[in-house]
Amino acid sequence: MNDQNKTNCEFFNVGTGNGVSVLEIINSFERSTGEKVPHRITDRREGDIEQIYADTTFANEELKWKAESTLDETLLSAWKWQENLKTMEF
Image 1 (spheres, helix red, strand yellow):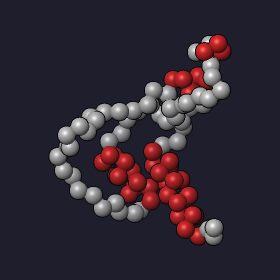
Image 2 (spheres, one colour):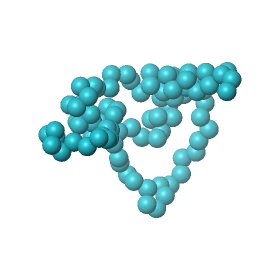
Image 3 (cartoon, helix red, strand yellow):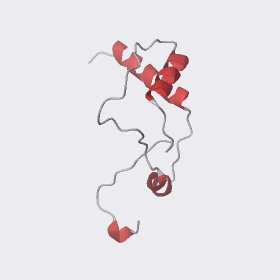
Image 4 (tube, helix red, strand yellow):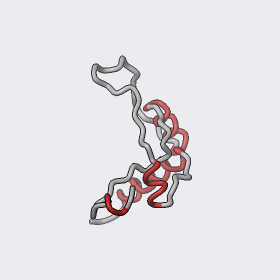
């Protein structure tokens, strides 16, 4: 994108650009946090998207940034942040 096409506001897809399934996320979360996620496997719902993931090319090029953390590391970090919120007073 050239500077002439830029606006005052930009949107970036950040991540790895590699899709993961819901079950892969559940398994990663359980593995990294030690917490069990109650879930059940059912048929796909009508209208569910089969695959979706972000194209991170623009963010990688524009921000000179690329995701380096694994899914396990990212989910553990998010869990620790959430757990920390429980102890904070507002």
